[in-house]
Image 1 (cartoon, rainbow, N blue to C red):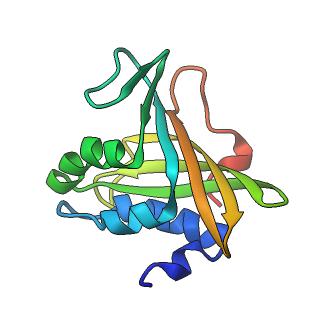
Image 2 (tube, helix red, strand yellow; image 1 turned 90 degrees about the horizontal axis):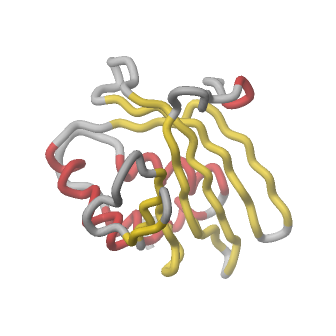
Length: 154
């Protein structure tokens, strides 16, 4: 299968997660995204206000299935240049589970300063000879929420 190398290690699956959504305006490889995410995976982000269209209403949180996430973000990523890259990582692993705190920066061009920074909390599970992303919960830096020094650019 075309995406098998993406799920061989924690490094490869995290790198693939960022790679799928990053790039110039245009179609994204959503089949690759589907391959990274467990069939029951959830993508979740903190809400500044009301839940966006297509997201299940949860107190202070937008929760998306894989298909809801693709439907919600696909049009924007097709219409606009968007690059997100990891700036630091901490990994906790126990048996088949792993938790990755992944600091990120978002920009419209690799040559431009980021317009946003934040942290992705990524839950992973190792099963059937591969890693699966079970969930990604993210929030943005701002106010008193600052990226810790341990997650600053390596």
